[in-house]
Length: 136
Image 1 (cartoon, rainbow, N blue to C red):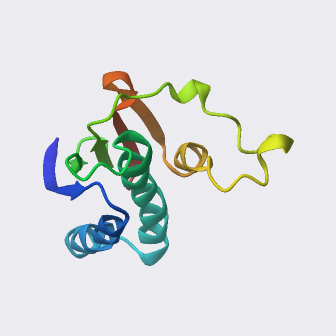
Image 2: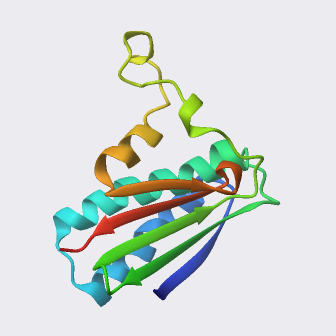
């Protein structure tokens, strides 16, 4: 597996805007289409936002670390986002499609990541998320 790029994000909202630059570089290198780019933008910015807001609780002394890998053998693009928070149990996140949760302002990120990515895995007690996309 080849590391394509990595970036550190300080735990404040404005940092999420840097995900666009991160993905632009990948698009230039890997030449994927705009539809795939839009999907990556949704999922990867959600992962970074969750790390900043829920993991690190907007503590600017903590960071989120994002890495992008290319698995040429399996033709996959893999992202790892790691925060410095206490972690969480993804299975305890309420279902955003349940009637009592439909009007809540947050809580859809974990669901969206699972819907759009080919695989989502949590490691290190929930402080690291590994998101896999097929390039074929």
